[in-house]
Length: 192
Ligand SMILES: [Zn+2]
Image 1 (cartoon, helix red, strand yellow):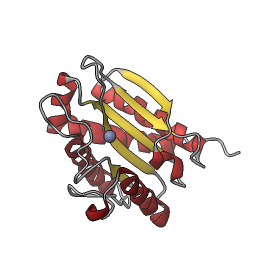
Image 2 (cartoon, helix red, strand yellow):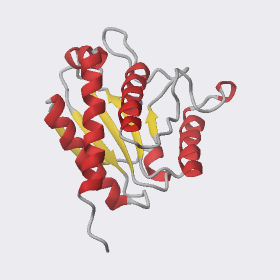
Image 3 (cartoon, helix red, strand yellow):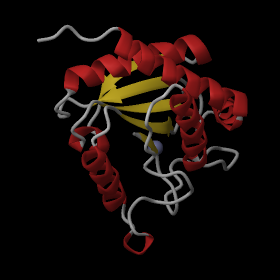
Image 4 (cartoon, helix red, strand yellow):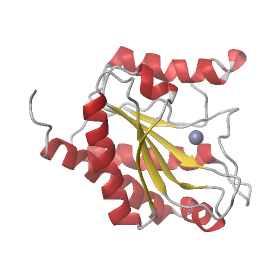
């Protein structure tokens, strides 16, 4: 399952050139969807257009995140891949981070998947490696399968904001996530 962050009334972070995180996360997710399908995977997107997941009349950030978790726990995909852009008050800050949660029941698999995707991304898009980190994101804590959240690059940094708008960059991000998933399955964790 691919979860493009934000959507609809929730723009996510807004870059200095007034671009929206929600558009970047969707564009990357749609390319990743195509690559995974071509490789034979069954893919479910939490959204494939500019919408929030919960009914827009009852929109709240929590309701939207809960709706994403409900989809994951209903369809029980093998993996939950959540795509975001990072943002910070200091516009100089750049780079890529991948998050997992200690509270996810598949913590070890999530760490393995996060490491595999982070290293594939750094090799491909050559962003600053901010590492694999633990986080308390709602969608990571309450999903029942291995789950990661990718902060692709900083939309608050003008250079990375421009890269996030670039279709080749978006394709390279999607392809790097795909290779990260592929390597995760190629190098499974030792059985406990
Ligand atoms: Zn976000």
